[in-house]
Image (cartoon, rainbow, N blue to C red; front, top):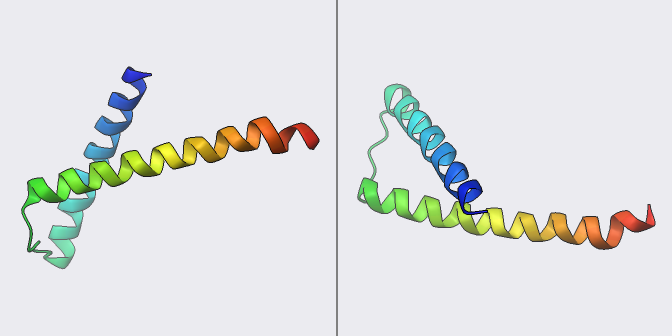
Length: 68
């Protein structure tokens, strides 16, 4: 379970870095907040999203999928 979360965060951070670099090359994006703060907020949002999606999938598998 812990390794799964670490792997998800590593993947998320790598993809976020690639998107940030590409966005900077083509759009010239300049953040008004610190890059570290943006990364921290994005990671927290990702973990919250992942937890909520896990709850929805578990509910579907345990309650709804039995009746199909």
